[in-house]
Amino acid sequence: MPPRSEIDRTLFAKAGIAAGPQYLALRDQIALGIETGQLAPGARLPSERQLQIGSGSARGTVREALFQLEAEGLIYRRDRSGWYVSPPAVTYDPTRWAGFMTYVAEQGRIPRTEALAKETVPAPTTVADIFRVAPGTPLFVITRRRSIDGRPVLVEKITVEPALAPDLLRHSLDGSLTRILTGDYGLVVARNRIDMRPCALTNSAADALNVKPGTPGLLVVRTSFDAAGRVVEYDEEYWRHDAIRIHVDVRVGSQAAP
Image (cartoon, rainbow, N blue to C red):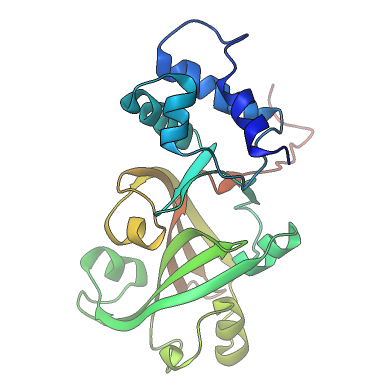
């Protein structure tokens, strides 16, 4: 990677930058450094003060440029450490049944799972409907944080019916939950229903992922059923928007309409 002084000169060079709002010009300079490899994935950007002095911009202009890059998923912030170039997003295929630990490792990355909370809670009406139980029925709820290469990328809340997996909360849940449900309780997933929508990361999800409340995210909701139609698990995943890339390979039949 080039020395810091060379990176700074590249970022602050004015040549070739289109006219427009000053924060967009600075955004374009930093984005160009990322695109050309001057700033590699994981590289730390110059401090906001250095960007301000080097570009001759006001502090508000620098922050607006950085927030724009963050919204695009090109950079991210670490508390009390500064701004960094985002690593490549992990590819997720919702049509394929593979756990987080598996598909992240298959892409040459290092996955990690931490159980943040394990509790029994009364089912709210919406969740009770999913499990076909009465509102207030006790259900297991597991909150976990999952990381890629040491960087937290998602927080998930998993709900499981105790009748299907007694004593589940006594297990260590810092690894594959699928392996436990299959190996210890004989629960095999036959079908998944997956919903995805953009969201803002707020409250506990933002805190767990060390991001500013309101940061863009992706909510992935997965309901897993066994062959008898019972709900094996209900999973709500809150992803950093820059950490995941959805990829679906659809085979089109020869009789498909034009």
